[in-house]
Amino acid sequence: MHISEGVLSANILIASDVIALGILAYAFWRLQREQMVFAAVLSALFFVASFVHIPIGPTATHLLMSGIVGLFLGVGAFVAIFVGLLLQALLFGYGGVSVLGVNLLIIATPALIARFLFQLKLQTIGTQLLVDFLMGALPILVSSLLLAGVLALDNEAFLSVAILSLLTNLPIVLLEGIFMVMILRYLRKVSPRLLEI
Amino acid sequence: MYKIIIVLFTCTQILFAHSLKIFVSELENGKIEVYAYFTKSSVCKACEVQVKNADKILAQVLTDNFGKAEILLKQKSVEIVVQASLGHRGQVSFTATQPTEQTKDDNPFIKILIALSVIALIFLLLYNVKRSKN
Image 1: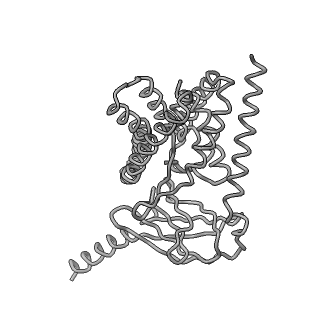
Image 2: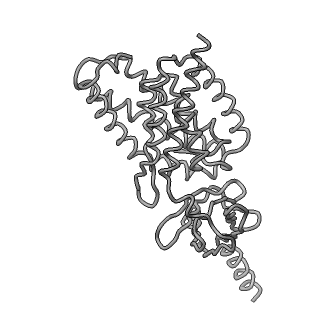
C-alpha cells in the first residue's frame, strides 16, 4: 500500500505534503490528552500490522488495520498513522520520507470512514455485522483506489501498475473486514466501555 | 533485394525496441542502481525489479520515471529480474565487489522493538506537550 520514493513527480509530492501537514496539525490539535495512550497503542498496531505479509500470486501485500485506528481516534488517526509511517520509512525503507504526505493521505483519510459508519449506531444484528465488516473493509478499499488513482494521475505508464496494485489489495479488503468483525465482537463482550466513542 | 534488406532492418529495429536491457551499477553503502530501458529514448518506467537469490525474493521495487531503481544489496551474488508490461522481461546476474552488511539487517525484531519504544516515547512527548498547553 506504500508508494515508494522516486515514483511520483515533485508537484504531486509537494501538494500532498502541504495538505497532509495541515491535516496533521489539525489532528494533533483535536487529539485529546487522554487519547494519547490509546493513540500510541494503535500506532504500534498499525506499525506491526504492516509486517504481516500475505503472498498473493507473484507478489505479496500486507495488513494495514487503518479502519480500527480511524474508528477509535477519528481525525487523530492522522497522528497515529503518521508516526507509524515515519518509523516504517526510517527503519525499514517502506515508502520513504519524501512520500510520507501522499502515503498518509492515502491511508489515513479513508480510515475516517470507520468512525463515520460507527456513528450511524445501527441496531439490528444483521446490519451491525455488515457495518462492522465495512468498517474494516472500506478504508482499505478506498485506500487502494486512492493509491491506484494517484499512480495513474501521475503518469499514464503507471496505469497497469495501478490496476495490479488494486487487484492485489482486494484480498486484504476482505481480510480486514473479517478482522474488524472479530475485534468488535470481542470488545463488545469483554470491554464494551471501549466502544463508547 | 532492397525490399528484403529494408524489411529485415525494420524487424531488427522492432526487436531491439522491445528487448529490455538492464544495466546494474554499484553505489556506496551497499546499494546498487538498476537501470532498465528498451532504447535510450524509451526507459522502463514503473517496471517491477526483483532481487532474487535462488528462488527467494530479497527485494522488490519499482523503477522511477527515469527507469532507475536503487536497492540495498543484502547478499553478494544475486539475480536481478525486471518485469515490464506486456510480458517484457529481463534478467541479469550480479556480484557485488564491495562487502554487503547482511548480518546487521537480517534481524528485524530488534528494529521493531526500537520502533515500538520510539512510538511510546513520541506519544509520551505529545502527552506532555498537551499537558503543558492545558
